[in-house]
Image 1 (cartoon, one colour):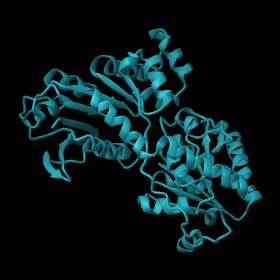
Image 2 (cartoon, rainbow, N blue to C red):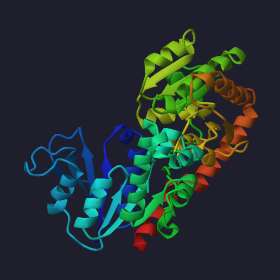
Image 3 (tube, rainbow, N blue to C red):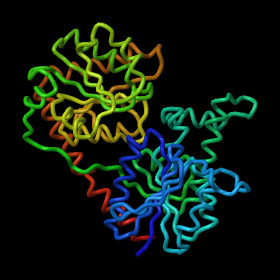
Image 4 (cartoon, rainbow, N blue to C red):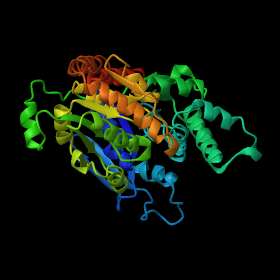
Length: 407
């Protein structure tokens, strides 16, 4: 049996996109009859631990393992040293990395072990910093050294680090979205022959015919309320401030509306922005998947106003539940949701000076779906159709197994 070593580094994203991806990747590798070893590096882990669970070997490693010999520098290189007792050096091994920032570790592992090195590009530092603006990236790349700001220097450092990982360390690269695929080849200059597009996907948890009114009663919501749902971290990049302002505008036209905000983050800022509308806004904090899916089942529409998303699991979850989805017309979201087919695109921009204008655009889309139950139903049905055709988990499993078989 071939061994696959799946690497991840803990951050709060473990509860969101990358964490979801890792769980599905492990299942897919097991279906491909690979022996799975999951290597988790985290500053939350105190001691190195090896344990077997559900057929998967878990290797949990502190980010700075204090028990290593003093002569070893406590960096990612020490992780490669630590793993030598647990990795059988075999040219058939597969090493699957999920964080490009682990350039030191990937480079060291490749020198130390034989096998095929795969990298999934979940996001890049430059796209997160510049909200996926390729034009801004090219401007920074063309600047002279004496013209560069501190931010420019940060973007350049991360860009060239990522370029080295993609072009020198990775044998195969997985892009999770079409725009990512185009960037890896077009901007980083990576050989197209080693880049594969495998969209993120989710197992189908939709239950048709759920008793909507009973669920609404369970969560103290009226049968005739116009319910809008948002899920995700409460960060500026998620467009949450724009959404709260837009919802206030929706209430002027449809006072019987409710906004559900499911996620963790800066509540204090949102409380002040939602002043006077507190009774109409439900803040849930972090909730489990079952409760979140209950909210999708009772909602009339979903909204994902992120200023940048490499992919957009939340939009796919909403489409799975036959919800029409309003998204910012940017990067990963724009290719998941088709404008005027299974949802609506709006153009939202970052910054206080753009807040009001962006909120008006989002409010207009919210009003449009609120006033037409027929349009919501039609778009929702088409959203579910697209989910089943592109983002249901069997597509991911088939493509990942196909990739592993070629290695």
